[in-house]
Structure formats: structure tokens, C-alpha cells
Amino acid sequence: MTAPVTAPSPSPTESRATAPAIELKGISKSFGPVQANKDISIRVMPGTIHGIIGENGAGKSTLMSILYGFYKADAGEIFINGHKTEIPDSQAAIAAGIGMVFQHFKLVKNFTVLENIVLGAEEGRLLRPSLKKARGVLKQLAEEYELNVDPDALIEDLSVGHQQRVEILKALYRQADILILDEPTGVLTPAEADHLFRILNNLRAEGKTIILITHKLREIMEITDSVSVMRRGEMTDTVSTSGTNPEQLAEMMVGRKVLLRVDKTPANPGEKFLEIEGLRVVDDAGVERLKGIGLTIRAGEILGIAGVSGNGQSELLEVLGGMIPATSGTVRVRGEEIDITGKHSDGQSRRARGIAHVPEDRQHEGLIMDFHAWENICFGYHHDPKFQANRFLMDNEALRKDTEAKIERFDIRPPNCWTAAKNFSGGNQQKIVVAREIERNPDILLVGQPTRGVDIGAIEFIHKQIVALRDAGKAILLVSVELDEIMSLSDRIAVMFDGQIMGERLPADTNERELGLLMAGVTDAPTGAAPALEETIHG
Image (cartoon, rainbow, N blue to C red):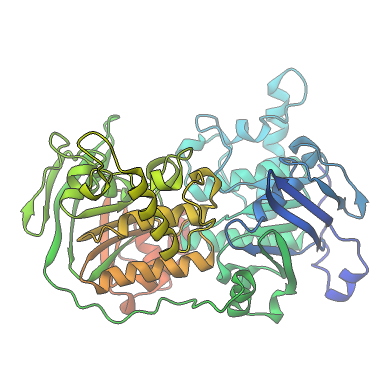
């Protein structure tokens, strides 16, 4: 392992005299008729944190995939530390000192931390010497960068924050001097995100170069030195972070002014639309996922559920949406009890009761990726009489006309009902699902992670649709790991941890620190007790 560089981050004057850690010149890449990258050039200076932002489909992931060797550019050159470098695959990228931490971790769950670190980097035919070496290197890295993690722990037993540390350790063990992080805080608590930022600051101080892909403008402003903005496959501009602001960045991304806050009037709650009492779910492995959940949602309000992924929010939505049965408990819709055992209920029965569901995972639960937009946008509602040609056949022409209208209203791009779902960007895939559910004018909307992986322009649009439904007197149950989204959209906030409701708060009476404590299961710590939260999360 090379000795770390201990010099401080270079000043702007020093940077101009230093070869860029990464320089891309004239990078272009097409997939059939779609040009994902158009003549992109970018320079990233060593020892800096460089942000890359842009709408869904702007070409960020394609560009980073070229740099990491997943794709080969149709044209252009890559320079690493001033030297022209060919990167035909990820092994070549690793050899060039590039590491990548993916949004969805690439770890073997039933392997230990140590085994994951050496996987693919074994030295010789015997594993024991590689493990011994890795143990020593990990200890050194943990001390240098605050990357403490038990080398003998199984990945499946670690928190999400610790798993992310393992991914960073994997890259550093392979002597990466350049780290690419893709949406690194998407599944972290506020305290875990703060700890990650301390790690990134330590890495920068040691001379590492970091590229941060994120849609969170607050993170860009907080942690980066410079930021590049992409739009429609082209590089719009690269600016110093200290010389810009979130509003300017948002306008550069979208090409118009964007409202960064949710514009809504105070809620006017009416009758009880959804009542949940003593809801329990025990899965097939005997693990209790929901432990006596009790909630009430009224007409004309948004109840936000905050929490780190994996604490029962998914099961709550799935029971209410008719996807899985409950073990016990009671659910009433407008005062009438509904079946939650699964014997006489499913998604169709829920829709008949006025419940619409935007699932958390659009690609696996909300869409059939190989089907056309018009087919996806009618799923679950294809039995509607207006879409029936006769007793046996659907009126496909009526379905396509209905889809074209939704595409126009929801600004889905490309505006072609014959486009397969897999060929839309993530944000436009989400718009298809949201359009399908909201346009049915439900009494109750269950919405999970409504803007996960969605660009800032689409976020603004989706938020407006949810608020408009609330203002029309509907009840909305919102689940999101984005605290900014929970705070700005919700009229009331409930926090889930380990299958339980830890407490309810009004957005005006709480803050991210308090919600973060509740998300970690801390109910009695005083405000500002960050050390207690760190100890709770990281042990």
C-alpha cells in the first residue's frame, strides 16, 4: 500500500499549477439513437471533492461508468494525473487508482468484512496470507480515516452506515487515490451522513480525490470544493462551490427557475380516513417486522413516516396496499374494517376501496420494465369499463389515448406511449407510476420513496401533485428516507425504528437532529446529544 499524502488540500493557485487527478476530454457515448454524453470535458483537481449534479437522464452515470470501465466511450480521451489512460474495464480502473462506491452496495452478505475486502484482490492460491495482510491494512486505514468496523463481523449484521464504510475500505485497500461515490447518503441517518462527511474530509486532507454524485444540493454546498452541472448529456458548467448557491445550481440543472421548497398552505384535516390499530407482521423466517403499529390519518392531511430503510416502513405499506398479509391488528377505511389477512384481499380489493399505492421500488413493484408506457400506466385499472371493448377484450386505443393525456399532464419524457418503461429515466419511470395512481382520484394514497433517485425538476412536480391531492381532501401516507422531504411535505411526522412508532411530531415543533435520534431508537436523549446518537448507531 502506498504511503498516504499528508499535504493539505491545494489552494486554487496551487491547483492551477498541478496536473488534474482526472481529466476527460471530448467524451461522447451513444446507445443506439440516444446520445447519453456529448463531447464532455471535465477537470478534477487532486485533493478535492468534486460534485456532479444533473437531472435524471443527464448522463452522469454514463460518464462515471466510462471512467470506471463499465462502458467504453465512442470518442474522447481520459487522463489520470496528467497521463493518457485507457480504461477498457473496471480492473483497469482499479489499476489506475480509481475506486467506486455504488449506491447499492456490492457486498456478499454472508461473508465477513475481511472476506469482502480481499474478495477479488487475493494474493496467491492460499487465502490465509491475504486475510492476514488485509487485517493489518484495515487497522491502519481505520485509524487514518475514522473507518472503524469489526473485520470479523458478517455484512448482514452491520448497519447500512457500516456497510458503506466497508465499500470505502475495499477501494482504499486496492490503493485507490480517486473515489467515486454515487448517491452515498440515500440510506443513511443524519448522524451517519455527518460521519461520512467527516470521513470524506479526512480522505481529502490525505490527498485523495473524490467525485460525489448526488441530487441533494445541501450536500453539494456543504462538502464539495467545486461542482459540475450536466443537462441532456452535455456539461453545462463547472463552478466553485463557494461562488454559487442552491438556486443557481437548480436553474443550471433544469434550465429554468425551480422552487426548492414545498409551497403549501396549512392542512385542514377532516374525518378519519385510515385507522390502524395493533398492526403486527411476522415474516416467514419468524422475524417480527411490525410490532403493534397504531396510526390515524385524516382527510386533507399528509402523515410522513421517517426512518432508516429496513425498520418496518416497507411492510407497513405492503400490508395497507394488499401485497402481504398481517399477522394481527385492525385497519379501518372510513370507519369500515378491511381484511388484512390476505384471504379476501389483494391490491385490486384495495383499489376498490379507494386506496392507491405508489410502491417504494418502482422497477420491481411498480412497473414491468419491458412493457410499453401505455401498458404500464393502466396496470391495476385495466378492468375499468371505459377501457373495455367487450366482455373479453380491452380497448387498447382508449388506453393509449388515456396514456397520451397523462404523459402530457405529467410531462413524461420522451412523450411516446410506445416507449418501453426500461428506456425512460428513473424520474420519468416514477412519473408513470405517480400518474397512474394519482389520476384515479383515490381517497387514500400510499406513497413510498416518491422521489428516490429523481432529479430536482421532477421532485418539484411530484411534490405539487401530492399536495394537490391533499388539498382535494384526500389522505396521504408518505414514507421517505429523505428527511428534507418528510419535513417539507408532511403535516404530521411519525418516526419508525425496529418495527415500532417511536413518536409523532409536528414539523414546526421538531428538527432533523431530534428526528435523527428517534430514527436511531433514542427517545429520551436531550436535544443536541450527537455523541449519544453516534454511540447508538455505531456501537
